[in-house]
Amino acid sequence: MKRGIGILALCCFLFSCTATVKQAVIPKSRDTIRLVKKGSFTFSEEEEMFIYQEAKNFGIPVPDREEIRRYIWYFLQNKPYIQKTLQRAEYYLPLIKPIIEKSGLPSELALLPVIESGFNPLAVSRSGAAGLWQFIPSTAKRYGLRVDEQVDERFDVIKSTEAAVRYLKDLYNMFGNWELALAAYNCGENCVKNKTAGVDFWITKDMLPVETRNYVPAFFAVLLLTRDPIKYGLSIPEERQAKAESPSADVANHREKIITLDNGAKIIIRE
Image (cartoon, rainbow, N blue to C red):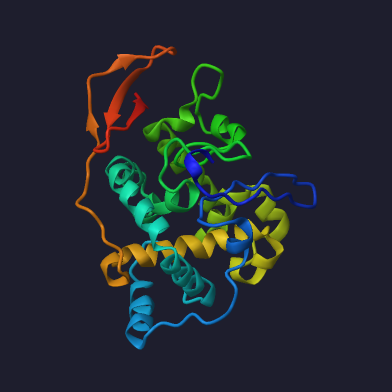
């Protein structure tokens, strides 16, 4: 992806599905993150109890799994990355969280861009996925986003979030649980159908591409870390609301807001 963001390489699948895995944004190289190897990662008794208790308090059930604990440990070994990502999230959560909550989906899904794009709305992967929600062009168009030579609404924070909501709803209705729905968001619904036949993710995960089998526990780890970031030594700045400037017209004659962040960067949100 652009701006030095680390990526995982794409994977292909067998059977009749030849989908492309979207490249989640996680630090270090693919070899580092491919398997968070079993080894010496430990939590105190207090931390273990915190993880166990907080896992019950989400709209998306978080299971008590070693894979999730390994990712908590991994992210804590890479604090600069997770710290920077959470700081970026402070700009965009006020924009995307209300859309997700209004849709009736669990509000925790607002944190999915931590894994997808590192909360960089300009992120582009080598496989062609783009924006906060890392849509590939075909899926973006299927869910109502304009992607052509003039306009690419995958970079539109609001519209791409609305499209992600529609896609996530469809995936949840298709699979009936969030583990498989999230796996399908990463590698595609046909991949998950063919590889798992709808059987429990934790039973069938080894049939999925490496990227996808790591994607789900990594997201759950993010949920637990953000539940009490200070506890894990992550300093979170005061909430920063993006500031809207006067609208202008773009090439597609949409109305747009130019959002100026505290650091001076600008993003466009088309209405």
